[in-house]
Length: 323
Image: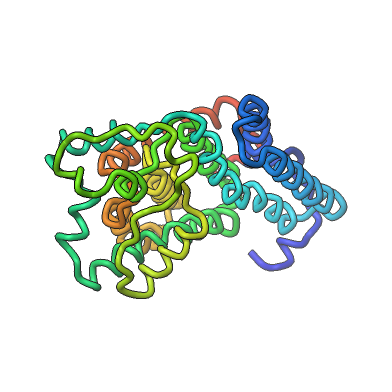
């Protein structure tokens, strides 16, 4: 496909499914803002975020209407995906309205594995080589997703709407779970209760502690990628979204989408990073092991659900994949 194909006038009617999903998610979370208004730190700012997203989506749609072509239609795909950056921190605002449940998940790990894997794993493989390898995998999370979605938009355009729906709907399913299931993760929980309790098997409940405390365990920086991961966590991480692991879940969804492109280079190039990423969620203490296991299982379930939802309610003839 040449540049002329992207800029040639060609109108496609209707919204991308990712645009529909974003509008529905904003409506749903606006209701949550109204319910939790008094307990939220900045509800007005959260409303402004939604107004801004609506404005950006409207501008993108109007621009496309003035000059309908494939390039501008692809640009309309981007605001809903970039919106994930704004919606993630809000899961903390919502879930922190409830008492945290980390004592339950720490107890599960202790009962199932006889230890706290999140505290033990990195001590078993402490070298700079393994630290950098696992942190590379964890950091590659964003780029794996970006590469797969861009591949659909540029090389599998007729399947891009379905892929975008599966991708974004799966993300929103995780976010909705996080908004009602407050689990901070071991890097926050063991900072709060001390790592010494890990061997006792008796894990105290912390209630609403993380409403006002966001300190986390800081691993030793051993190289470039561990520094990059720590920097990203310092900027964007919150005591939220531990169970199930969306890093494992969404990277698994991404790998299944990559497989469906039938481009085996894309899939197999990402496979080593995917395996490192799954291990890294526990290695860097971001998740309990049970979080990561359930992240994998939930990804398969969400992939099936979102495929069926697309076929039942979203699928449009003019963007169905070619045979």
